[in-house]
Image 1 (cartoon, rainbow, N blue to C red):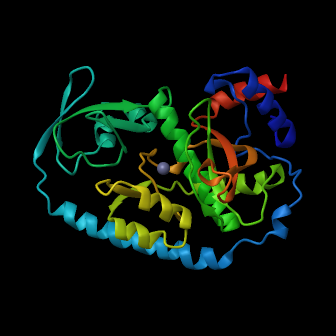
Image 2 (tube, rainbow, N blue to C red):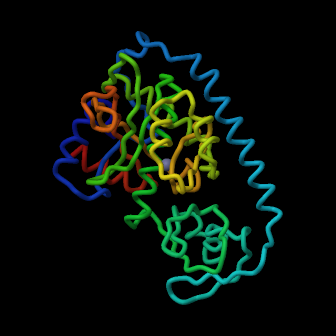
Length: 317
Ligand SMILES: [Zn+2]
């Protein structure tokens, strides 16, 4: 299996040649990748005060709001609802209780293990989010645009978690790429410039998040709660202030990362079986050269290892 700089060279060539997401080689988490990195991060110690104060504060606020919302939900009536599947099958469920994951489990173990995201009455919906009324339900795996985009966007949170924990950087935005495959996360690092030498540590932090099987948890927050939660990140504050007044603001947590995001996401981090950083580059906040200079880290990820073995062989040959 290729790894390190050789792997990345193969990836780069491969990315130029192929548009399919299914043929990219990359290092598995379990591989014994060699470190070609000089630990440049030693010269840029992480912002410990940011990590020690801001991260626990956000988690505490998240948990407090989550507990309040759960109490409210438990007081709502769990009336029967009808859940209609694409083939016309109707399943019985309970309002505010039954989730798309419950329905997937009822259909088959395999579907429950592979469904990444659902669509409820035309709205993309987390697998664990309770249904709120009679609905039309669709379930998506990685073999769909909806599933892949959600998978890669969720992988950006895993990458963001690693970046924040490693450098104490201020996270900005982390979307899936709209053309091609994969995802990236933009963040503000002060004067630190990231390059390939940083990737091993970043991937190692992502592996930790995956190993912990962190659930993606969702809460809805008021504008004031959002402003309080992200008061230490001026980029997120700017995004919140620009949201329309009637916009429902949502925040997601996976492990130590609490992030402003509309979602939805995959059920938990363990669905990601392989993740690699591809490239680091500079970007301006909001694409404006008069604004802050950010670092952008691109990544790719997969939900299975079978594909990787085939791809690694192709890459080595
Ligand atoms: Zn997100």
